Image (tube, rainbow, N blue to C red; front, side, top):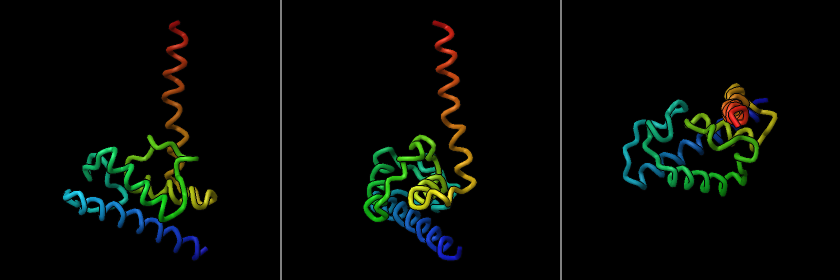
Length: 118
């Protein structure tokens, strides 16, 4: 169990370091790359910046986190860390993943309402 915890900590640190490096490279202010920091609102990342972070992490970790988790559910640093942890060890799904199933529910309900109107 300790090995999984250490691996999870390494993944989290790699994600935070990669984001910090990008912020520095882009000349953006780094208010602190904490798990609750919002990628766009808090850190000021644009979609291309996030894509660049994801590409760097995919190269480093050899994992695509968006096979199981929709990219639209990743809003914070913690969400991104969790996505990579799940991609690397699906059995490690943390409490943050509990939010993931609720994400598709909204579009489905909107879709059902739209179908009823037709």
